[in-house]
Picture 1 (cartoon, rainbow, N blue to C red):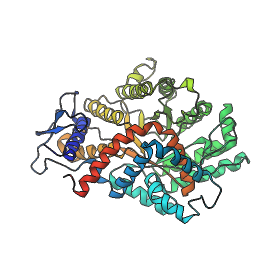
Picture 2: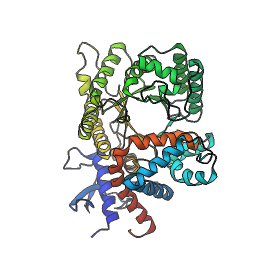
Picture 3: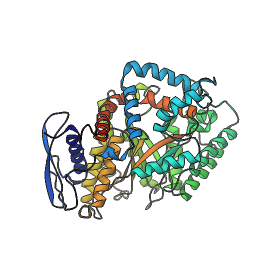
Length: 486
């Protein structure tokens, strides 16, 4: 019987082949000559088979997707996965993280306490963050691209969360009320500095609340964007365009989101021109019951006004603070919402619902970034995009985004699948879909990034089960490297 590592590798290879070569759920039809490999599903114990190209210069077994990661990254992921998925470790650990992230004490500040920095920097900071300065960020970006990712999404830190009062701020660089212009200028300068540290093909992630407590108050009140803010965003967007970068506007809490959407649409009207890739992306949270309406509204508005729609689709990040009645009742409902929106966008079903008296969006006139870590969703979306592209029926330009240090198993699986398609000329045609995957990182001091990570830990408690399953792949990869399993 084949070893568990070989079984897992063939299982992953089966997933890769299904992404690009399956026309239905039961049969894999390759355009080149093939050979059949049999494998045992390590979870179900059932036997399966996969068709792989039978070329003279190709071995019957190739390295698993995680082989491209460093051993240090594998070890960090395993340690952190144990932390995230063990309740008696996670709960007190999160309390310590929160204390370190928000403490004013030099003893608890990892940027000032070398002992604390020695513990946090190599294990936590290196796993999730881009760097503390331009040199470190450039090194991290180069490492990400070397792995095969298409680029990075770099985020500038400061943000405000609303907890009953508009002037309560948490997260990076807690701000005190000051003049609106000063807050906006400092925030804009930070985003410009962030753009200085990325290159062509990268992204800038923006939170409007980072512009300060005064802007947050305007967002809550549903007011128009102040002139100083509009000028700042024009400066940011024009600089991003000049560098060949794109900008995504993050979703925030529902008390702010309606205004954020309106301000974002104003930017999209000016910068997302038909016939060329969009510059500005609006974020939609699928856990909201209104998510489908939001997608439809953006498509209708963009068609009516003549600009290119661009959506970053996420499951949702503010369940602890948002109004519960607006959120789907169960995780299953949220999954169905997310997956349904993806399928309808890829197939053009949303577009078909737009007023038939208006000009319809043609293929790939909608930009879609799927930001998430759900293995099933990602595989299904990539497979569907591949099938539709072969039939010249793909209705969006589809890309993927994931947080640095998370879901590397499925991320690397997509990269390996893309590499295999590019290397096999018989699979590469004008209608071949090859995914692009980006890694989202934040930058700043260790304490600033700890504040970012605390929020991510709170948001992603529900991802513990996915991390537990993913950790099994990392353990197998580590054992393969030390030669216990070959």
